[in-house]
Length: 465
Image: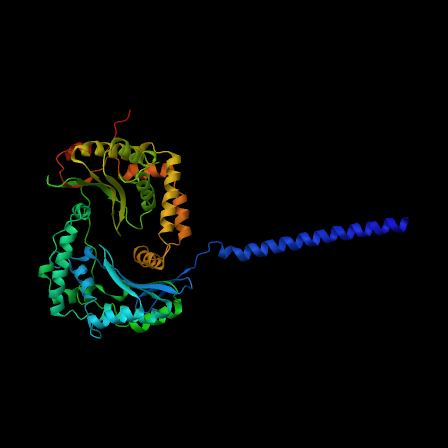
């Protein structure tokens, strides 16, 4: 009996010891797994950045996919123009595809078509971009072609004259887009001088702005960072930082409260934008203003669920039939921004729409609720992440952010920043930028019923007791 008792006690001790050992092993395994999982929790490829000796920055996000987007982002746009060469940035973008010293226009088109790739470009107020969408295996060829376009554009006299007509027709098409016209007026854009630009103007612009330190080469998708660095070193080695004249700098920008009305009663609808000065890209208030813009939202008459919309202004627009559509905007530049709302309305509804807009602006400054801000943050986060679902979108995000911020903000950091914003932050920032501020107004169409500027200005604050 005593032997059986000793045996059972020994078994119990061994069992307890075994459980302790198992528990220790489980703890070690759990901590090891956690440590191993920590770097991969984000599940996002890192953005690698290398600065070459020339000053060119190369940035990639490698997904290991079979397709890729590679492009050249240049810190040069229409804001760097002056009264003598206004329009040259856009003209230069067009001329890039009209042949180089190495390739004619037709040869360029055939090479791209043989790859099954796409070649495109666009110009904004602060940046010029040339990019290609292609198979991952064709990235070397795409970079070689992009380098040829940027460094050795031919700028032939015949091509310049032919393209001048194309751009003028393009401008006429833009003039028929009243939204574009309104936003140009909002920016007080000067008249273009396409008809006066010469080959020398284009060459001077190219020599003064397409410089290595102002260039970012970005790639996303099936792009090996080390290989892209070598490709850039080989194919963009003609870019330097030697300026023949003064180093181009942004001309000082000053926001002023003002209005531009272009009355045209032959048009069926009025197109109107009301804006205040916003924040620049690197300003800490930028994301908060984006949340505030999301709170205003957007609405279109074609949306059947307008009356059930969570946005107060959208519900008012639907129930009162105040407009055909509206959209808020938060446009950022390096040193400033524009924040406001654009709407399209029947002439007789303009005054009511403006009243509701200004009531909502004052509410953003004084009494926006926690629930509304949480909803807006979720919507802004979702829209931001959903836009990064293609190689082209990610490549553009990398190139733009390196020029604006000097680095790439990873999606998880951006999400964290948005989620950190509170209702009080929104009220404080809106009070700073909107409350009792002079707005800029641009209106085109039958705008007789648009209230006088001084009346709109006087509604940019509430008398509170």
